Image (tube, rainbow, N blue to C red; front, side):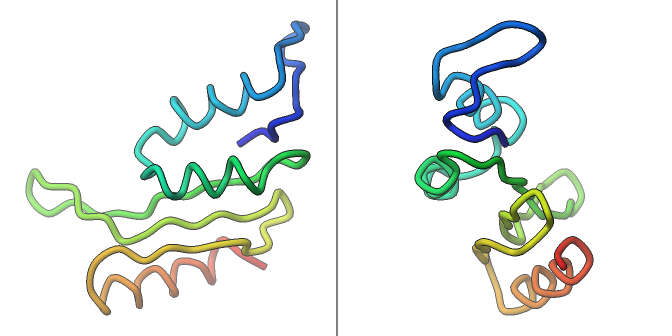
Length: 99
């Protein structure tokens, strides 16, 4: 997820915020509004990495939670979705993606 102030991509210069909105609405379009808003507020000058953890049960997608790290994989924020079991799964997942 590019920072708000990042403006150059593929040799073209865009207005501030354009590339970040592109990332939020395409790369992580499944993130809920509160997570996207947190990223917008936090990622003004620096890029972040956003993760959406879920599993599938038959034909249904079950959310576990959302995690945001800096580009060095330091945990910045996490949100739990669902049960204590899902929270435990998210905490375990964080161990593998964060420093």
